[in-house]
Image (tube, rainbow, N blue to C red):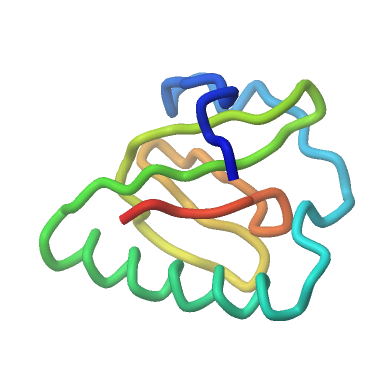
Length: 95
C-alpha cells in the first residue's frame, strides 16, 4: 500500500472529523491482522509510551497520525484528550 498520499494530521483535529459507517477493510484476514496490531500497539504504548502511525480514513480521505494509543474498546481506539478513531476506519498501523 502506498502511504505517501495520506495526509499527516495532528491528533487534536481528529475530533472534528466525520467517520462514515462502513469498514475500510473488507477481508476478514486484514481485520484480524489489524486486531493483533492494535493489541501490540496498546501494550507498547502503555509500557514504553511508544508512538505508532495510525493510517485511517474519514469522509474526506486518507489520513495518518503519529501518536500513542491509550485504550481500545470493541469499536474504537482512544488517544490523549479523549480523541476517538473508530476501528472500522483504521487501514493499518506502523509500530
